[in-house]
Structures are given as structure tokens and as C-alpha cells.
Length: 150
Image 1 (cartoon, one colour):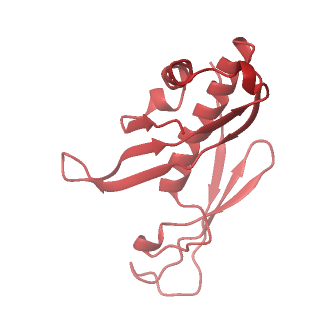
Image 2: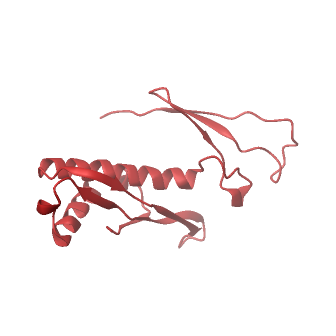
């Protein structure tokens, strides 16, 4: 077992505290010392220049999948040269009528160091299935997560 801590700080500004006007900007402080500015999504009166919870959920899933995929590839002795992903989180009403991130689509693209010995499409898909199955974040959410290797 391990614990992972994040401290979140928000403070009221000079604007009136009403739904349409209060500033949603907050700061997330991670254990290792990194700080990230966050806000609500622009559709919910947030600031587009800061990460919102929906984006951070997509980023957590994409990051976890990538790290797990890299571990799978390393165990298979298939050195990866580059990995990119363009994750998309969809926020909509769920079956209960509540707003939720109902699905996240991961679109990883992997380049291997040795193209001559790179896995074929079937083996690559299996590697992604294995990574998804072992991804701790994907195992922690009820959101549908789809991996579409490119």
C-alpha cells in the first residue's frame, strides 16, 4: 500500500461570491514540490488556461496507461523510442442523469527503437490490453476507458 497526497488551496477574491462570478482558480501542491494551477472547465465559469478536473482525469488515465505500457514493453525487451497520446474525456449526463466523465478515449502512438523487431498490430494491441488491465487508475474509475492504438 502507498499513499499519494495533494494539497489544494483556494481563496476568495474581491469579486462577489455568486455562481457566475467567483474565481475558481486554485493551486494543487504535489508531494514532490510541483505546483499546478487548476480551475473549472470554461463551460463552468473556469479559466481555460488552467487545468480542469476533467482534463486531469484524462491525463491521469493517459499517464498511468503510458507508464504501465512502458513497463510491459520493458519486460518484453521491446525498447520504446517515443510514446504520445491524445486523450479525450467526455463529460455528459450519465444513466442516472448526473453530469459525469462517462468515457475517456486514449489514442496512444508508440514508436519502437528497433523497427525491424517492433511488434505487429496484434501483439501491440495485446500489450495495450495488458497495460490497461494493470493500470491502477483505470482500475479505480467506473468511467469507460477505451484504448485506440494508432
